[in-house]
Image 1: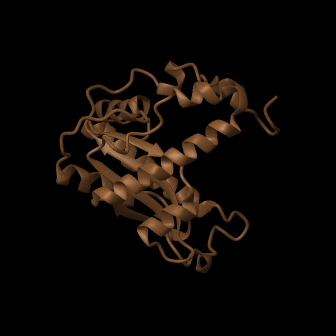
Image 2 (image 1 turned 90 degrees about the vertical axis):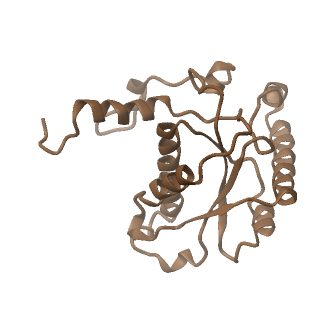
Length: 214
């Protein structure tokens, strides 16, 4: 055992948060303690980032008219996605894919502008800025689960339209709308698995040695 390992109790808590994290769509109206939100944001900001670029920007949506405009953007993309799914369109439309109008906390996460100045770690894989910001969101998600607060990542939107709504500068790129709030219960398993949309693949089928998995 490594001398740097956590205690068995602490390790169990970390793995539990990972295992029980859920993409939540159903929220209670109760406000979330600002100190909890601050801790979740600090966890996000502790995420790794390529070249230490820290590309994440967090925008809290407070204005009710702006929230409704964001919700309408998602509604529009939901319909467009359904059309693109052909035979699965109706099954998709029956899914609850967001909780924008219900959640007490609504945040937009965006990549910052002027990212072209960051070359370290991105010269051949430009998308590492997105990977870094995704790590930040995952940190926030796990912190939320540990705090008993639900988080839902919504990606059904036109980034250019959302940029306009939040007055983001040229070069910025929104990647997530986060619905945050208390929940009556966390889903026992991922909601899309419960609804039969898809199932988690066997890890063994995704691992190989020296060559692509067969």
